[in-house]
Image (tube, rainbow over all chains, first blue to last red; front, top):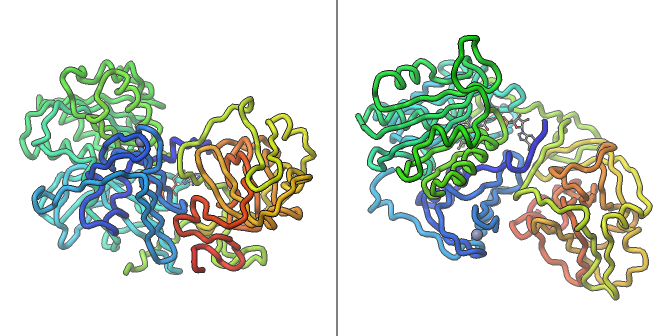
Length: 99
Length: 225
Length: 201
Ligand SMILES: Cc1cc2nc3c(=O)[nH]c(=O)nc-3n(C[C@H](O)[C@H](O)[C@H](O)COP(=O)(O)OP(=O)(O)OC[C@H]3O[C@@H](n4cnc5c(N)ncnc54)[C@H](O)[C@@H]3O)c2cc1C
Ligand SMILES: [Zn+2]
């Protein structure tokens, strides 16, 4: 099978299950600012590189391709790297009400 | 293709567009996990429907679409994802673009729109290999023909019945230009399916002048289409 | 947590305890593509390979110069940290020994760096003595970009993430320092026979 890198790309939304292991709030609808280019967007709208065989999940900025987050779930632990985000803003579930 | 109706005691309900992660465990302890969109409309009856397209060389879909029997138990996590969702309050007009099993989360939105008696106009452009591959064909026929404010356009990329006078190629910019609401109407756009289709459609929509922030995508991965 | 899914086998996992299969690995017959980002596209006209860092004098090759160096063909087994192994993969490339000829250095470590920003760290002695190559052909064909072409580092005795795709050079270092996956918890060395998958293993 011919495979191209774009075909391996998913949306940040596909990481929602893993985010649930790490955060109380839904991260796919959280907004964040890219440390590399300043773009602000919802995490679910960013590019996710993750396949069943990947060593980890890499979330990249749709504007500049810079890395926003890396999550490695392996060896019985999660390691979460957020250096590519200046900030991450989640809706307070108690206020947002839905879910 | 197979739809799975699941009874999930304690299911908290979901929002249209959300998915579940299904985890399978072999008897030697090997585990793997895949995401499947919830195709049923939000409800309170602790049931939900997934529709799985079988990929012959896949690991999980042949099991879910073949081996699995009524009464078997599945390990699910969900509902998950708060990004690729639509609620009637979000309004429209709505443009849905789907390829293959990418129709599933959009079906949940269309079903919710009906159930909530929303009058938001909606258009669906749906690409399948052949008429047999069109998931929810009868329901889409009904939706598109009852004056419910939903327009359904199918494109068949590989095989068309002799009488077919509809679209017969992969989704491209020209097709989207013809089908999409003009950018000035600020449609809310949901694109879902195999990654190559999603990338083509989303790029074409941006080039046609639609605001990227109003285009939500859900890439299913390398396959299908 | 979790129960057995009736009749679920998963992708056929050939776990025949072939003596060539390190612990915890299973055999695959296809060649999975793993990717942490988009595939970089550098034209061969702009491509260079460098040896730099703690060396008396940095060295550079363009594509043509690299291709004119003596090459070797080799067949090796490869082992991915995500548990698949592939036997008898056939490569062609330039031995790192050839590239290091005449390079004066006191460094003990190397950071391989790549187009797209990927890096991985290795001890220098794991790249010398006929253990590592800059590979540009796989199975008799130019290495496809999805598998790291035009050229990737090939260090088959370590887990395959050390065999950096799209490699553009080696930076020699006096101290070890983590590369991309190593920063996120993978092992600094990565010996598949010792199952050195994650830091602390
Ligand atoms: C958010 C989300 C929602 C989804 N919803 C649905 C849905 O409602 N319905 C549905 O049918 N599907 C859905 N999918 C897709 C689904 O999760 C699976 O990807 C799909 O069922 C295929 O799984 P599989 O195990 O059968 O195939 P896999 O074993 O994962 O293989 C898929 C294909 O890719 C190839 N492949 C896989 N990995 C590699 C690799 N590393 N290198 C080279 N080739 C590779 C395989 O050969 C095969 O052709 C969704 C995906 C996402 C992310
Ligand atoms: Zn950015």
